[in-house]
Image (cartoon, rainbow, N blue to C red; front, side, top):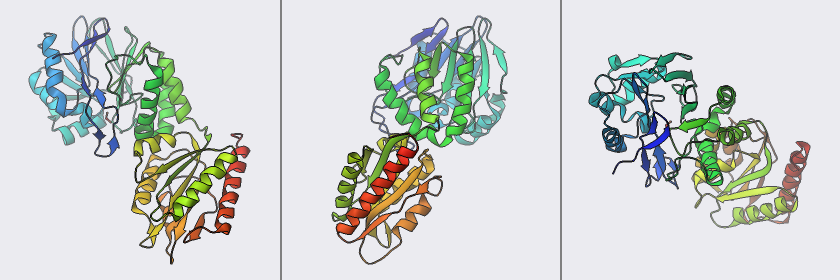
Amino acid sequence: MVLVRDVRPGIQWVGAIDWDRRLFDSLIPLPDGTSYNSYLVKGSKKIALIDGVDNSMVDTLLKNLESLGVKKLDYIVSQHAEQDHSGAILRLAKVYPEAQILASARCMDLLVAFSLVPSERVREVKDGEKISLGDKTLEFIHAPWVHWPDTILTYIPESKVLFTCDFLGSHLATSDLYADDEARVYKSAKRYYAEIMMPFRVQIQKHLARVRQINPEVIAPSHGPLYRNPKFIFDAYADWSSDNVKNQVVLPFVSMHGATEVMVDYFIDALISRGVYVQPFDLTKSDIGKIAESLVDAATVVIGSPTILAGAHPAVVYAAFLANALRPKIKFASIIGSYGWGGKMPEQLSQIISNLKVDVLQPVIAKGYPKEEDLKALDRLADDIASRHRGLGLL
Ligand code: FEO
């Protein structure tokens, strides 16, 4: 089967929908699959392809191009060297020997390193550079750190279409070409932002301001559906990447024999009764993508862990390490849990989340099963969180 879809006159989607993919980077769960969007742009004089697809779906892309009778490509724009887009570039370069590969200098280096693309086939494009296809122009916008240092965006002013690669995308396999079901796409795009873009929030703000100025009519990312209402995704990114937090506590935890779980259950109710929204995640059965998504808006994270081998439970260590790497904009953090005969669990977790610029609130660590004084300490921690949220005008 082949599937090509018209975006605008002379611009077609020729990519691949990966309905069954369930894991990305051997790390991120993909509950809804994904797509690798590749776009064919036919100008009156030249033809360009914008981004390839994952190596596993190169044949799909080549069949799509064959179905359109594409015998020659003048340019292949490689907006980003990660293999889910560039995995196809080497095959494309062989099938279309006349094609010049256009990329940023950083992307050139990475294409040669990762995808073994011959360096002589690649030409650097600078920020602001324009290349004419005849009645269409490719305008390149460098956008480093969304989420690699190499990324460029491509704008076609005659068609008012902005190609954004990973930026503004979503891991969502859907038969909809456009994000007309905004409620569904919002969830996927937010999760995607959390997992991939959140560590680069400051750069995202800058790039977002720049692309808003361009005022495109269509946003064409390289994952998930396109946007013919760019305001929807611009506003969502503005909110997620802003410094604003919400009256929310994220509570990832593990309990081995029930002591930490009793504390977590008590603490959840203590927060709710004080008007604080809480999202608990039992790490033995939680999806890390949902935890990442919850960290986009939360003002506070409280980690719950028992003590094992003198430290935190390994599942908690893993979650704390990921949270530290994702650099959410949380303001406050604390730790609750239990121990038997010693250990340095709170100190260890505090060190792991050292990237997070937070006020650390007094941890509550019970010896064994929590007693009355431990529950009172949890009440004090809940009071402290509510008070701090109130102080930020969140509650
Ligand atoms: Fe979709 Fe960073 O690759």
